[in-house]
Image 1 (cartoon, one colour):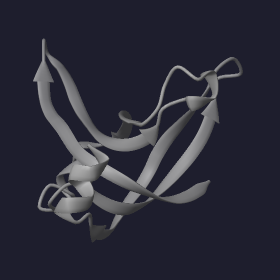
Image 2: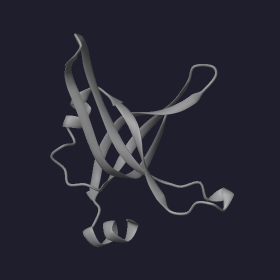
Image 3: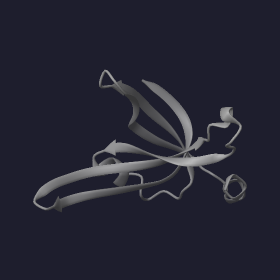
Image 4: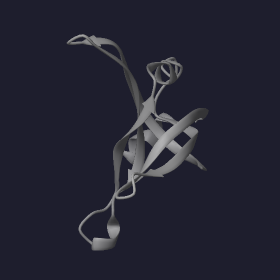
Amino acid sequence: MAIEKVKVTGVKFFKGDIDGKGIDSGKVFIEESLDFTTGRAKGYATQEYSLGKAELAQALMHNEFPMLCEVEFLRVTNGDVSKNIVNSVRPVERVAAEHAKKAA
């Protein structure tokens, strides 16, 4: 587990049935640096991470975005491919509007 302070740019969720299958999911969008090591990219992009259940995303919906959050990442693997999963998100502070414009 690793806890990082990151900029969260948004959340979304869905809880319901599609074609008779129950779906309960949440997503969080986190700003990350583009891979500048190749010399062909510079700046930032937003990466989507799974939050698991919809209630985790719904708990963040009342906030204004973007905002700084402490995010707990879990690094998992299937033996072939590793990935990061967001385990928890705790809002820390709202990103000032002028700072948000500079980052865009």
